[in-house]
Image (cartoon, rainbow, N blue to C red; front, side):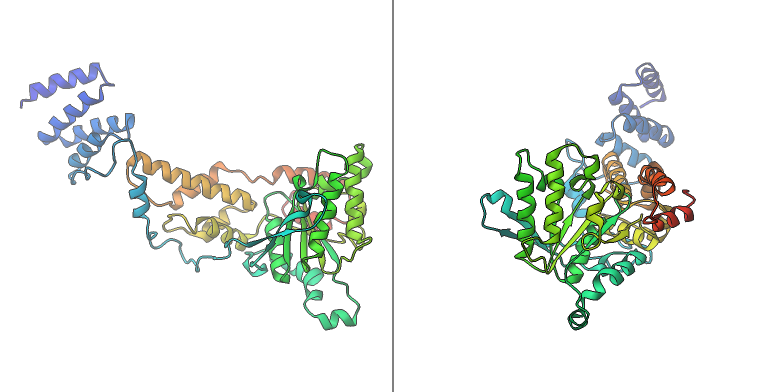
Length: 416
C-alpha cells in the first residue's frame, strides 16, 4: 500500500464528495497507515450523511483507538429498540439529585360501571370512579388545599358537629383558573379525601342532537349519583354546559341550563350526599344562577403550580423514564409561571430529543439536564393568553370583587 494510492483516492473523493463507500474505503486505508486524524474526519462526514452506517461507526471506533462496536450493536434496518430497553432495565443510578422516593400516586383508579333502569341505557349508564388519591398526593398548592379544607372538607369530617349545627351534606364548589393547572386532578383528589365516588362529566356526555335528550342525560347523571352516595359530580368546562342564558339564543342550550339548575336544587329528589364540583377557564361566562348560594357557592382559584408543585409534577413525568443526574429543584426554579401541562410537554420534548440522539448514535442514553433545559427554552408558558383576558375582567368588569384573589395574584406578578 503506497501513499500515492491514497492520494489518488483522496482526489477521487474530492471529485465525488457524496460517494460514501469510496470515502469509507479511503478511511480504512488511512487507519491502516496510522493516519487516524484524517480517517476520523472522513468517518464523521459519512456518519453525518448516514448516521446508521455500521462500517463508518466501526472505522470511527478504530481511528479513535477503541475496539470496534459489536456486529449486532445496530441490526440491519436501524436502531435496536429491544436492546435499548434491556439497557435501561433497571434504570441508571442516580436518577434525581437529592430526590425523594418516587410518587406512586399515579395508580389507575378503580372504575365501576353503574347502570340505572330507564328508557335509554345510553342515558342511564355512567362510569363512576372510586379515587384512591387524596390531597396529600397533590404536590404544593398549599393555599388551594387550605381553602378546600376550610370551606368544603372540614365540615364534612365530623358528623356529630354537622348534626348539631344542621350542616347539610349538600354543596357545590367551582374551581377556576388558567387551562392546564390540574383542576380535574384536584377535584378527583377531593373526592378521594371524602371517601366519595367520582363522576367526571364532559360536554359530550350531556349534549345530544335530539331535542330533550340533553336534559334527559343530565337527569340520568344526577340519578346515578343519588344511588351511589356519597358521590362527587364533576362538571368539566362548566362555561360550555352552563353558559349565561342572557347570551344564549339557542333554546336547546337554555333548556340544559334550566335542567341543571333544577337537578342541583334537588327538586323532586333528595340530593343528600351528592356534591357538585365544577371547573372552568372562564367563570365570567357561567350563568349567574349557577353560582348563587346553595349551588356552586364556593369558588377557588387554581393558579399555575408553585415551586413545590412543579417539583412534584416534574418528578411524576420523569419517574418512569430513563433519566440521570436530574436536579428537580433547579428545574422547578427555571419553570416559574409554567402550567402543569407545560411541564408535561417539556418532559415529553426532552424524551424525544434523547431518543432521537440515541437513534442517531446507535446507542441508547439517558435523558439529561441538558435535554430538559434545552426543551425549556423552546416552551413558553401557555397561561399568558388567559391572563390577557382575565386582566380585562379584573380591571373593568369585577364590580362585586369576586375576583379579588385573582387581582392580588396578578398584581404580585406584575400582570396588572
